[in-house]
Amino acid sequence: MCGTCGCGKHHHEHEHGHGHDHHPDDRRTIAVEQDILQRNNLLAERNRGYFEAKHIFCLNLMSAPGSGKTTLLEETIRRLKGRLPLYVIEGDQQTSNDANRIAALDVPVFQINTGAGCHLEAATVHHAFQHLNPENDSLLFIENVGNLVCPAMFDLGEAKKVVIVSTTEGDDKPLKYPHIFQQADICIINKIDLAPFLNTEVATLRENALKANHRLLLFEVSALQNTGIDHWCNWLETELTAPSH
Amino acid sequence: MHELSIAQSMVELAEQQARQHNAEAIEELELEIGCLAGIELFALDFALESSVKGTMLENARIVRRHIDGQGRCGDCEAVFTVSTLFTPCPVCGSYAVNILKGKELRLKSIVIK
Image (cartoon, rainbow over all chains, first blue to last red; front, side, top):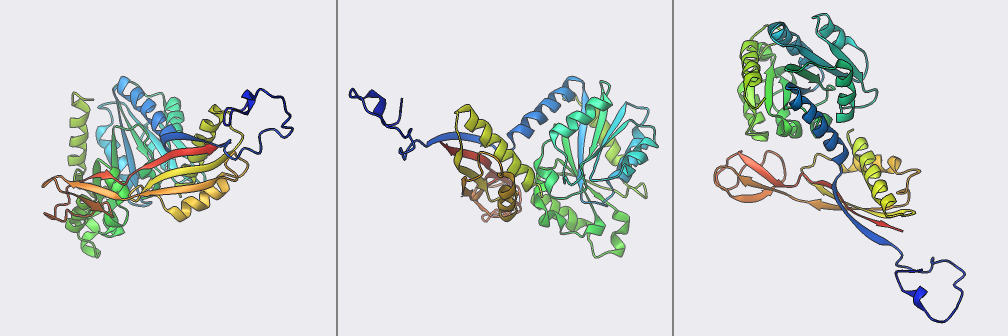
């Protein structure tokens, strides 16, 4: 029966003999109206629910390769270890170099190798924390794949997104790659000790980050020289004891 | 190259909808992409070309609707067109701009048969 032209309702008998291919309008338009990243977003919300239920404070660290994410993480772990259980998920295209550095600090770590993938997605993070099986009332760091573009679009279920930018990258990066700064809650400017030797002004970098996202909470640090790390860790501890967490 | 993940998600979402409606094939895919969505259109076209192979979308026409960016100034409340994520308010010069439109990345409709 054809519901389009009503030909099945004819009282006389006849043979079409050619199916309904002749109907030019057997095409139907379906209104979908859905976000293309819906699947990832739903999985991310599922992760978020798990973290909230277990009081796990989860941070997604994003930056270009070489901006000092792992060094910052090492320094942060050295300060917070023993205060609460810490866990790390490492994302890299290849190698377990970063995971080895974290494991050397005696912190449970799970390495995700994305192969050709340029970012982590909620599903991979879900898989990783099932392996880690984090305790309640803990802190989970996700170190995203080094990339200042793609990780911006993929919610992982974290409580806060942190973008790290180092002075060696130049002070115009927030304007060149604004999406990741727009998505972030926190911006850590790293390698401030090197600024005097570079054509980079920390104040300009700061200003540009705020142009891309005026809500950013900014920290200026040198992870290698241990500058500003206390300030960052104090903020973390305040967040951990905040009633919303 | 996050456009590949995006393209694969589009195919997955469209096929899922088409199957729910017992379709044989998808003839058209209508997308809404905001100019601030962070999508490189050339890369997306390239990624889609390979992602649709062997799927119900193999011969689908891709229709892209572009959405201009719009922001509201957090200081003076002016509403204006934004072409970047760091467009200042044209009235008061503030960068405290909240994006109202332009970040869309949606599958609007499909035409099935």
